[in-house]
Amino acid sequence: MNIGIWVLGDQININQAALQSCTEKDQIFVIMIESLEYIQLRPYHQQKLVLIWSAMRHFAVELRQAGWQVTHAISTDFETPLKQWIETNQITELRVMKPNDKPFLEVIKNLQITCDIKIIPNNLFIWHETEFKEWVRKRKRLLMEDFYREGRKRLKILMNQNKPVGEKWNFDKENRKYPKGKLNTPQTLWFQPDEITREVINQVKDLNFTKYGEIEPFRWAVTRQQALQVLNNFIQYSLPNFGDYQDAMVTGEETLWHSLLSPYINLGLLHPLEVIKKVESAYHNQQLKLNSVEGFIRQILGWREYMRGVYLLMDDEYSQSNWFKHNHPLPEFFWDANKTDMNCLHQVLIQVQNTGYAHHIQRLMVLSNFALISGISPQEVENWFHAAFIDAYDWVMQTNVLGMGLFADGGILASKPYAASANYINKMSDYCKGCVYDWKVRVTSPQDKVEEGRRKKEEGRRKKYIGTQTSTNDKHHVDGGVLNPKDKGNNSPACPFNYFYWDFLARHRDKLKSQGRMNFVLANLDKIDSEELENIHLKAEKWHSQKTSTRSQGIGNRQ
Image (cartoon, rainbow, N blue to C red; front, side):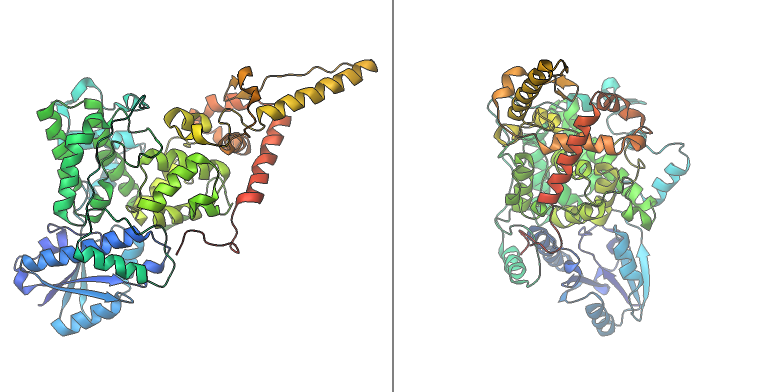
């Protein structure tokens, strides 16, 4: 029997299951394929294409040096080079480690080839698929925090016998600080492209179909050795202060104290468990702050593993989830950051355009939050995230965007919608300081309010003249507060995040009542009179009519 192994582009690890299933590597044939047809499913970020293809080519070199017989193919599709390779090497059994993405598993199953196909269980996650499903079967509720604690217990991560180190499982409340004063952020470890990567960059530049984002400067790691350097650099320089400021957003700071490890873990260059073990070891050896170490480990052992588990648990209809029935098309500025005048969106989107990266709060509380409260189609949002981010795959974005970011699954994944007004963005970033909009105002500018007051005062005089008096209310509530009178000289218009937020709550009040954690927010909504709510709704609708792209408009920063 002649065995062949197909190594997929996000399974770049010498210890991956399909390779490990064979002991006599000098007698095993390996193939890696770059499909030009497959990357046209959506306008992918150019740096993502460079990262994957360069990592694949470097891995092919590594496998050859280790004694494997490797074929690297560039083709229109996957099937054509597979058939030629199978025929040339008389392959009787094709082994493939199970892909993470469900659509690609269907691609493999539908191959018209002459040999048997053997799917090997995926070993690049901490929890095996069967283990997660067994854990779910015994549960009365599906909650990430329960899953995270179970993982800590099973693997004895940050445990003191049967209790968590520090007497608490979760230190998230300590990880919401905004850095004050002059920042002294650690230097990010980037790399200069080598000959292989430069060749890939030129190839991607020459592709004659739609792509997204800037291709240079390309600074990402493309080998396991480089990825390990990024991990060690993070532990030494960023991890000590990671926890305190992991939710902060600062203009001009692309990475702050974040690890930038997700692209490498998702490619297979690093295994998630080895990352966790190294971080835990640093905690014990270097006396690092527990909130930093626990917060980082929770992102991998908790959220990453849980998102993948839920993705595999859901049926194919999950991808079409749309609990709020949102259907506005994706605004054009998602593809071209220069087409929005909202500074928070501009700052995050220009960063994504330039690097393919934004950290989790920028994704959740700026991009996804805006898409949620403004009523954009979940499928269009998820498709953009999948195309734009360097660490994005189907298994990543289905649950993170549809479930976590947009609450499109109605609460399968998250316990409440992550919806917020501009107040949150102002608290956790400096974006509002450089914006043309006023984060404190939800529907009209302070100057509009002054003019309205003058009009009502004049109207009152006229009515009094004819014997009628009408009372007025000069208070303007913002998230339960009142506008500061000293701000009334500011002519900045209301921030769209504010009127979209309150319009979202008003439109979906009945559905949100079923979410217990929303009761306090809905009580604040009840304080707004019907006339103002109508103005808020009209403002939101007017924004969509003026700013939302249509299919007939240009594609923006796609190339």
